[in-house]
Amino acid sequence: MSELGVGVIGGGSTYTPELIEGFIKRREELSVSRIVLMDIDKERLDVVGSLARRMVERAGVETEIVLTTERQAVLEGADFVVTQIRVGGLEGRAGDEKIPLEFGLIGQETTGPGGFAMALRTIPVMLDLAREMEALSPDGWLINFTNPSGLITEALNRHSQVRAIGLCNGPITMRNRIANALGVDGDCIWLDYFGLNHLAWIQRVFLGGRDITADLLAQIAKTPGQTGLLDFDFDKTLIAALGLIPSGYLRYFYHTDRVLEQMQRADRTRAEVVMEIDRELMALYKTPDLREKPKVLEQRGGAWYSAAAVALISAIANDKHEVHIVNVPNRGALKGLPDEAVVEVPALVNRSGAHPLVIGEMPLAVRGLVQAVKAYEELAVEAAVTGSREAALLALVAHPLVPTADVAEKLLDRILEANRVYLPQFERG
Ligand code: G6P
Image (cartoon, rainbow, N blue to C red; front, side, top):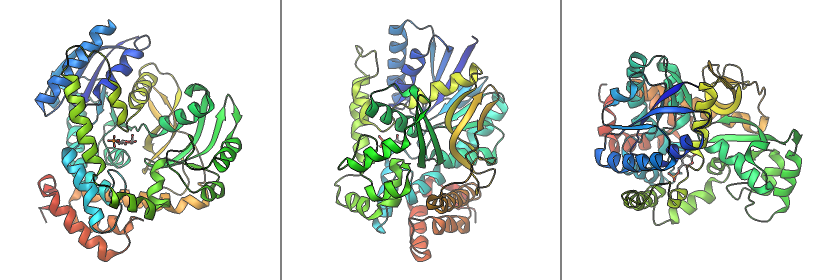
């Protein structure tokens, strides 16, 4: 087992202790000599980094935790670089969630116009980082958690040479939810899963080799309200007709009106709630007695993110030939999408990377939605890279949650204005 160097861009995130815990848990199979935490916010970095050091010390793991505000220090010779940045911070997210609501549209961190604004701010920063990584650690792997994860991974694959794999806790959370409902270990469950990041479905579930999809669908059909198998109260007739288990993010498409009404009635956006959790977490992290991941962190949506990241890193480093659900270029896995389009599918992971498994045809009932959202994503990436207003407008027009070109035009003006300091690429023309 070789000694690995891991870098974390956005290491001052309150999620970082979760990642550290993941490495501690897998210490038998993954020997990490150095974890370099990098953040532009030194104060946060010091607080989170000190907790990381206490955790490692308490676990008796010999991993050096290095703190830095310099990106180069992370990238030089890193075997794995985990990216978890939020360009514009939580204030930026609050804007992404509020602006679409002004137009009567879903305001969400990664889905719809909110995710679009986040992608415009974030893609140039991630491509900059990728360029540095190409020079400083060309053999390293970039494991991307930065949202909107699918779009960022699409940009990295299309516009850099870096070896990037996009990751989300969504698939592992869906798997573990099913395992919990059945009272079995997550590892016993195998998902036949397809789609895009935050736009995915499970088409078959296997337990110890047995296809239990029909049993699960029957259980969903007969349980009133939201069942433990789903993370939203999807319409039961819809689920039965689809014969698929949707990711919770499909609520924005299948039940737009219901969700919009909830959003409009809420006195705070999710970003504002998260700001409060974040303040609470930072205060806790400052407590010198705290030497493990605190329970409050479970109030965030990123459950299991470290399990997904560390298992993926181990599969690459140990050449495991394991199957992980990741975001990678399609290359024929899903029929009806371009080869270069990044999709979220099971992939065989070994030392040479993540190789998507062939899924084939998507069910007709969802194919059009996936194709439409992918077209939006491709246009959004083009807009973020070129600063083309036309591409940006076409991206919004292509998005199924944006009703008309008239709305798209006004929405775009509003987004570009509100995010001006983060969007120099749009100033050129
Ligand atoms: C889920 C998604 C992540 C997202 C998170 C938001 O885990 O898969 O992509 O970042 O939810 O959680 P939050 O606590 O920030 O609302």
